[in-house]
Image (tube, rainbow, N blue to C red; front, side):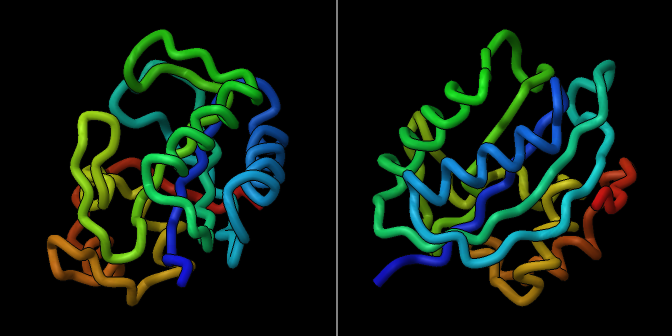
Length: 161
């Protein structure tokens, strides 16, 4: 049975909306079935704030691919859309993060699941709650909506589309 997987897409270089659209098209072709898409949100850059605002969107995916294989495919999609890694939290044409892979906990050098940044990032939690407010974080044992209500991230997240 396929797992419920949640991905976060982000872009702040080039045609940001087109980058998200291209990423979703590639994900559908190469990674699995898209079950749902959140609205697109515009958010200030997090972590390294002296850069352009991001567009962010959460994708719910069904896939039978194991987590590491999915990660390899997503990294290849980022490259196809022009992602070049210069610096941590730097500007990028596309960023695709695996937030949750079902209820799995996964910890390798390449991948940590659930994504460790979920609880502290409003730009993740707002679109995630749109699709899965009741989804339970498998380590913290809190629903996404609880994590959002407790989130202290002050950066605004506003609907773009």
